[in-house]
Image (cartoon, rainbow, N blue to C red; front, side, top):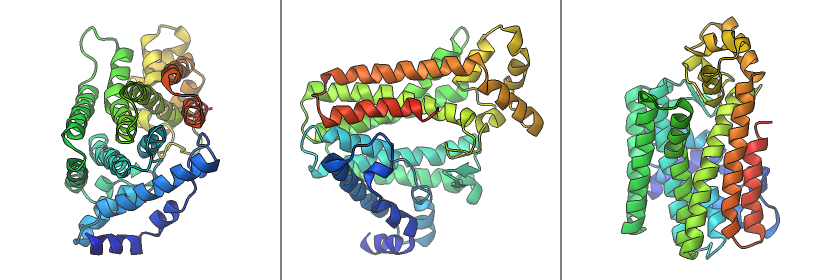
Length: 351
């Protein structure tokens, strides 16, 4: 692995620049001072371990496995793991390895998601399936799952069990999203349940791993795990809203991509469930994929001004507030302040 890792480090200038990036530049909610420096150092360790984890003696595999990692990303899950660990022994070596497991798992799901969504762009770069083939993207995702499992095996059987349960929720959420809401099931409730499984579960596990491997007391681990799930759902809702309100593709994709693909996110679901005569045209547009450019621009403009968007923003605020309420169990100090700032960030990033 050492030779492969050196090859990746030698050819991936983007990753190397990001390793030296201070934590305060990754998100406006991150703290400065000693805590920020500690998080930045931890992220640099995570990044180096990620480089090694996507290495291979086979150049093509190395390129495919490192494709999405080199494209960047928020490193939201490892950052949350590192921040939760600050409440205990943040220098415990298991913390970094657990954070890497969570990010590798996330990256693996992105390869599979892009195949299912027939995406052509991910993080501003061509998706793996469009650059190569669906088969290569699926197999690369499987490879990253295998690498995560290999690291996980050294973290003990309880960690393996937690990861297995998390992975089951990830897959369950994906299946439920693919099948859609059942007869008599409220589409909004279905959407939020899918987000809890597909996104909230892994964010929750990130916080859980960071805290537990740092030796944080069990009751606090439980509170941080619940925080992770709530803020994870909020983060995904904000991503869905960014797809509508962003003007320059801050979400990593062109604005209105979900509309083009016929994916009804929370604002569209609220519009579809309503009966306001003023939304009749918008309901007609969002009831199917909007592929015509003129109709797409019309739908995006109507959705941005709709009550559905306002209601979805309210739900985002509710989840952020629920996450913040979990912090009552966290001791007052810089860590709780940073986690509270994260709750604000997931809301204000859509403004």
